[in-house]
Image (cartoon, rainbow, N blue to C red; front, side, top):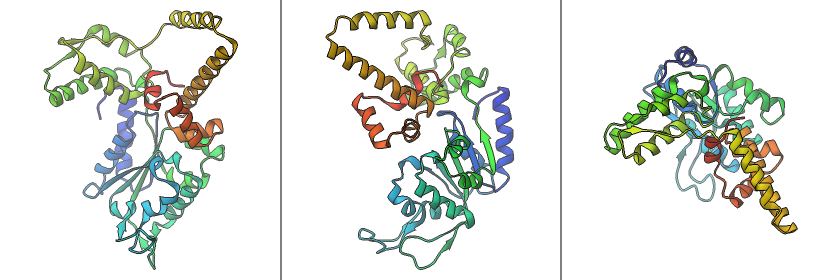
Length: 327
């Protein structure tokens, strides 16, 4: 964790305080702000540091397998259960279970988690009795869970259970001066990893770092530095600002309108629909900070249908959130 801005230092102070208590923690912040890194800092700064830190992406757990993933199962619990299997909670015993993208949990999964949080008792599938867990829960979301709860998308009672200790991570654009520090750190990391010698940022590059909004935050910065380090042929790396001028955007719009008048009606109609759908999908992903499940909920579509549209146009959520200004 690197930085010297006031926002970053204040975050470190809160992290240190949270590490020395045992209450559940909710970490919120835009995508790429380092939520898992902070969760690990809390774990390794606590009395549980000698025990496992088990991270899990909630968006990757199928709804039908939530209990099996969390609680595990006994041999013979179902047809393919050939042996006992420890669930995530058992794997994190005496340590920390980190649930990332908790807003992606379905209503059924939210009930399952809530039931466990009430007394930390659980029963593996096929087991005859319950087991007690000794696990600290840290959850993270790039969406505002309070707003989701008010909208009825996220359970309010579950929010009360997990939001005992709360931390909102600042975006990189709010951490004045930290982008350059982080960039230099990533350059040193690249030099050690790829052995292409030491390289530095050109003063012109450093000049726009403080003005850029960094929609993808630290992850965007790290990927940019890694790419430019590998491609640079000189000691100094001069990266052009990804910001497009307003005048350039207007010129593009005027050209698009002119080109449509050269199309047949049906062709122009198809072009407009395609442009609308791509723009609409992009806006939804930006508002959901790259979370596909949340974006689908925001626009009133099933996640699968939303995903098919993304696949139809070859749209990558990570590229979208790292190349457009945040909403």
